[in-house]
Image (tube, rainbow, N blue to C red; front, side, top):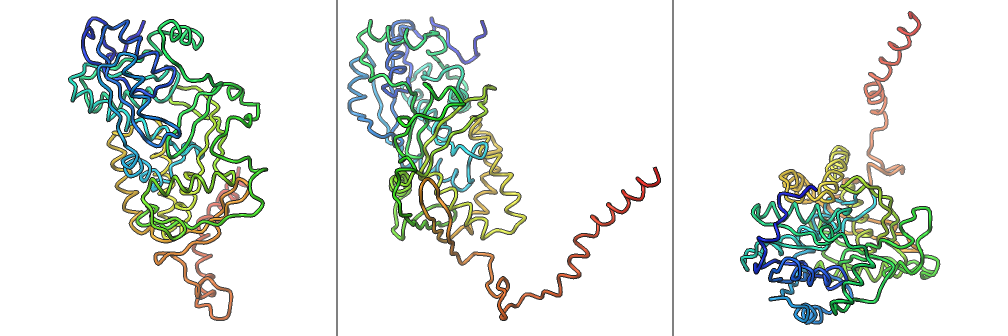
Length: 414
């Protein structure tokens, strides 16, 4: 059986500290006990707050101690997540395969960073997490972790123990582990979005059941009147919602409520995972969809067509690198350098209409806009020299004309 070089041997963990990324759900609650039972290690649990709805972090801490952890950390990383991960994604118009706003992918390097920080502080020999062997998150967390600390060992109990869900539940009951109410779905969420998997969603030909959604109203039941929102950007970063200055977390939270009410942000995506699988993914990203659409529109308005074309390629590569767990790869620094340079002039306000599941840009305003009314208008005040188009057309189409004629001539000779 293949074992990763970063996987520890059981005998190396006895009575040693291990840091577990702990969400308090079935998987991490079960593995918290399993690690102690099978590896005889001292578990230190870590929960990171990045905007999960309905999480009682005090209760999670108390539960962790009841299950035997030596120490527990609760880290409020909400502002850091927005400023260092979500804002760069907005500036990169980040949509994996043109659809997924990467909310889960963006959070994994942050979780891994804190796991490593605590491991180093507590002299832990390993970290552990609840990722499966089929998913992307194992790639993102593991690569970030051993890049930050090449000596760290990484335990994936879900892969090691080989439990099926019913076996996991049986283990929890037999060991007195309180587990959440069973859901047919596997849910992951943070302030930027919500992922929904499992159940009927594993059949890509079936329409998602209504109970899969929580953040967004069914567009058929959304308000019958549109709502307009205005987003103001400075250097590519959203700083105002409807003229009111807000910090990033507050702005995204408020926009989630507004756009979600109108059914905006539902995404049904057949996705290519890093490990080679095609996977049906369901997402809810009200604020992310609106912010990326607004940002991209404003950016296009202030950039030349050559910048826009090249930026599209950069954005696609940025989204792939993030999705593929390569957050700390030097190429990300290179891409961010270009993206940040372009975004120095992404300043202005975008107006959008939210209606029945759609977010439509209906206006934009900026001092940097490459738009001149006197050049663009068809009225008599136009300053555009239309006669100059004659010479332009001849030169622009010169090689097209030549190549076609040469091809036609050679085909006739054959």
